Image (cartoon, rainbow, N blue to C red; front, side):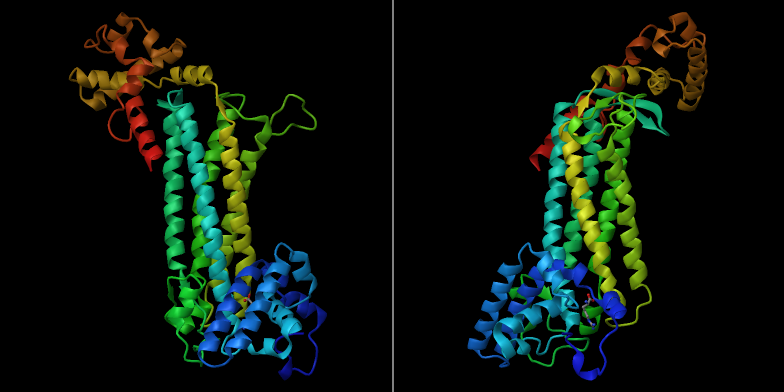
Length: 455
Ligand code: ARG
């Protein structure tokens, strides 16, 4: 039975019910709805709506319901209730009779659903923080294992300058640390309790909302009833934080897909996270990484979805807002599984050091070093850049790296070049020079890694 039959003389059409019901989605709020209801029972007891005896009877029944429905979504959905709030109320009435009808005094589904969803965001947000932190650890461990493997760093997907594999890992650690801080920040703002703001104007019962908020583990109550029941900023913020994090995951996946390609051959992915082709027996496809990249699209879609749903909604609650949950749930599910999968991929990843080193040695990745050498000998950088460009053209024509050009040939580009030039053209020298903070020299990367291990 619907919660609102009195005013109506006709049943809803089957199509309307199918269209309007949110239970197939919001059954996931069962725990939060019950926990919120338990707190609400106490709050209305304090203002004299229920006796202590009635309150404890209701709370016992609610706790029973929590146990009975734990991990049983089919049971909840099969009830055919309109939404999770209706389900809890009708189950309560089935247990305790008319007393169950008193629980909704002073409360609206508007402040109730806002509370449920914030409680859910807080709980799931913590789980996501945990997964982000596990992925961060996986990257740190990979950095430890492969810290000094030399590989080409790219700009425009062209080999640019050599970098250490550990440096690549720590680049993503920076990104996931920002994701952690963004989510923590969003959760701080979500930590205000809507319960006790009623449908839109505030509850008519003079309860202590500070105490109510505390009893539900919120830092404080919300401060404006109109804003409270129409606010879904937390959903937007979490979807936004997830989108940024998925962008990072997708970029990492893309790097690794490229590293894993036959052309690069820089890494070997574990059999556990790859699949074969039904036709081509030789193939080992990076499906896990491609799916991470692919799922990024649906997360962005949900962010745009909720932003668009909320746009131009008048204050206060509108049914449009029921559309907030499906996207959010999908965002959290997708983000969580991608974080877990990414960690699994990294745990089994092997670097093919010979391939990465030989690629770093090709592609004229030491051209900047030659320019810096000329600068050290007194030539202005712009001129040195030009001279090296000419040398590279000749080396490309001869299909040889710069360091294989004989001294006389190098001197034909600039007379200030001497035999010591070859020292600065080695990979070791290229890397060792990047010793300023944040650079890819081994001591810098080791120091960065030590900083991450300590925090
Ligand atoms: N199922 C609804 C939702 O998720 C609950 C709130 C209903 N409020 C109302 N005024 N009809 O938004």
